[in-house]
Image (cartoon, rainbow, N blue to C red):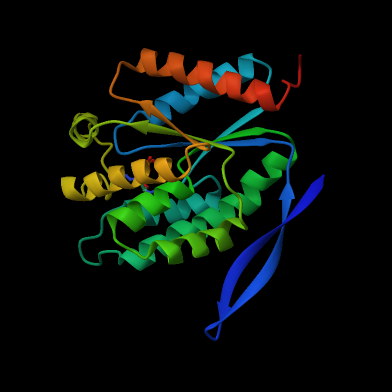
Length: 241
Ligand code: ATM
């Protein structure tokens, strides 16, 4: 087990202070899938998990918001609509980050320390895209709060399944009974979210790989599986080979 020291900036009584946070570097690999509504993440993550397992890797699959009983309870609060008491944007962000803190501490880090490939359906990029670009919350604040929730955990690889908003929303609207509170946001909101994801991909081109999701599922699957298997083989040997 190796340890690295990463500097994080904290502000106490308006006096900036550098605090050293020790982050454990694990044996596992952390891969996230991101994308706007209707991008097919949930289907593709299942394909990817099966392909990696067939190749001999130890894989765990999870999602956000959620992934542990407490975080799933927060997911239910977040995604249901309550017209009598709309959720304020900052409450939404804090609930998502609270759920993430629990998920990282109880599920993701322990799995990485056991050497798993952790496949997660959404993570921190969704917070910057939805709550930052979509809701307009301060992105520096979101990044700092997210760093606190995750203790600095960043994905090793992020796949961004990108597609035009009207295509994704049409897919979600025809998938009966599957709409949640955020699905019902305006097209303008979803346009900001997509633009947010693409901006994040531009800022982190080594971590975030854009995949065109406006294609038949089997074409997306073929590209995704080939790319991720190649990427994983360069970093870890499968356990049972
Ligand atoms: P899925 O539909 O991908 O399960 O995600 C649930 C919702 O949670 C999704 N919106 N819709 N529809 C995006 C939203 N979400 C955020 O707004 N911020 C986040 O940080 C995460 C992880 C999800």
